Image (cartoon, rainbow, N blue to C red; front, side, top):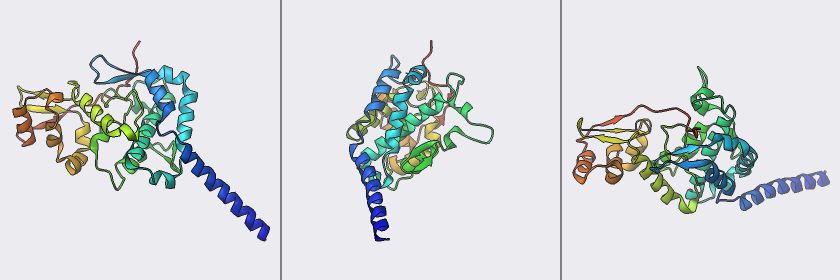
Length: 270
């Protein structure tokens, strides 16, 4: 019996040790994902949105799978001890890489990620991502782990997670990393707000028309950024408005309306 107990203890130590070793050796620069993004994702001429070469991702499927496997290797306990910026970068990258993986399950036979759902289901509720010891959906990652974290305070993450659609903020052609996360989120926000197809001031109607993202996640902007209008008023240059207009926006004197969302696949066109 004593020999059996000793063997079980050694086995348990080996399993724990293996998990710790994986966590210690994990590439927090997300090198495989960074290489895939640099190869298959490209900014438009204005630098406000990107197109994705999903056919290229198909050819590099092995590397994408290897990257996702590396994410699976991280134990939840070790993850919780990481700095917040590293945790957020990990989750954003996981969401974006898993979204590409989901698109590839039917590409090129789809025009929108919404086709991967059904009458009573949503592609974002499919549990297909092995992450932090559980099988999770994209919603679990975004709403449970990112937005649901006790220390969540930054709605700029909404400009980083990408839903494979033209209406979404750009899939950034580089991986997010803890060391650069604040700069990357700021850049993503500014690029998104400069896109007049998704965010613009209608001077004749005296109204600000912005992406539906601000509608869906209005509570986040209210709780952590003083509200949608206050958040937008911080970026007058990106929105193409003068200081006086920004002040009126901040004071709530310019109504904010939400534009329709384009769910077409953000794919590279021939």
